[in-house]
Length: 542
Image 1 (cartoon, helix red, strand yellow):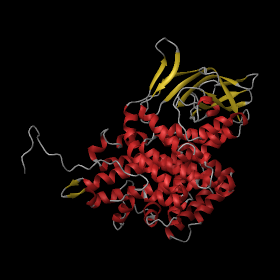
Image 2 (spheres, one colour):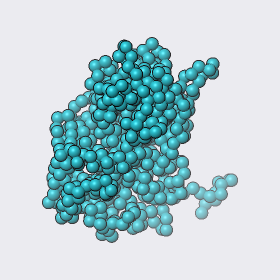
Image 3 (cartoon, one colour):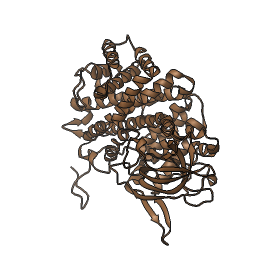
Image 4 (cartoon, one colour):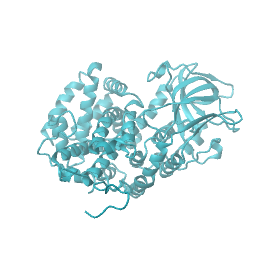
């Protein structure tokens, strides 16, 4: 071996090259197929451009935005109350890129067929680069259709949908584009928002004043916030601006920022309202109904976010194992590692394919009652299952890198911290299951939509047909104690149906392993005759 340079003790070798730059769109055959199949092919060039941006600049900025977390400045140097959150410049660049490219508004500022699918794909690509910014982007996107129904709030709706980002803390009249946050949860209630105690008092000019608190108040530097509070006729939804029209700060105080497990780039806070002005959205006493209009969109983004985390974790694992050698050959050439990676690829493809199918249902919902019913129940089913799968998935991918996947120079620790969030946000797993039970009991159109979706794939696979037949019997006797198992089986059946109808080459293996029982309880237990090499080539170009 040649001599080492002076003062060096060893040669650095057997290390994979940097993951970036790469085009997250071009690398993802499953995503490209889904976008084409679900009706957004007209947006392909824009998705390719954002895939390149997300896999290079935004990917690198994500490390900066998470390393230097947001800081709360409650007062300025003279002692004035300012309630400002300071972010690393990388956060603002991430937000600017996302907002400009339509992650928060494409569905609304270009309302053509397929726009929701394209926006879902943009969100999926962005989330892989940096997940924390997805919180205000999702809330902004989901709030637009609700605000559009209030004549006095049309400017808010238009600027939320607009492809512009402006981080300045000024009234919205001075901005071309805005972001929106939400304040629903209180200390005493959690998911039970009907227990909220914040009071909304009507004023003579039509506005309301808010007195109370919120236990989770995400993205507190947004321009406005949708808040649930108790008005005279009951729980009501209101829009509370950060700045009033005259430029003065609205009457609320940020008490502290949450010290969270993950989601470090995004600020989440506790807030107290001390007479803050707000406008009513919808009727008094109909706050929950108003919020439910947004739930379909926010739950879809939970599905997309978890699927995106799986995708990035899988890509990292494949990249590492294709370049790292152990015991005489590349890691990816070892049969046991191939089984693990193929099992992860199968899970990732099912998650992505199902999420984009639901995005198409959301897209078609305004003009197709059947698709609207399917979107209504599939978002709850998909959010429960895909978000539950993400933490174990990311951990398994992390293990493929060994110790290198446990240090912060890798993106895997950040993904691992992020992975549990989507199962908690927008209603925990139990809340999703109860929502599915409620739909099965009270919404016959939702039951019919499920049957149509599942039966459309009938006759292609005997294992699938038997699984669905048994599932139909279970649906007729659904109860709370067995709700989790029922929703899990619904999710697996729907994923299988979507894969089969998409003619995915992995559909049969998914059915065998997930529905037919030819698999253990952990990843890497696919049947020995599975064509794992073909699965891996499909998952990420070598």
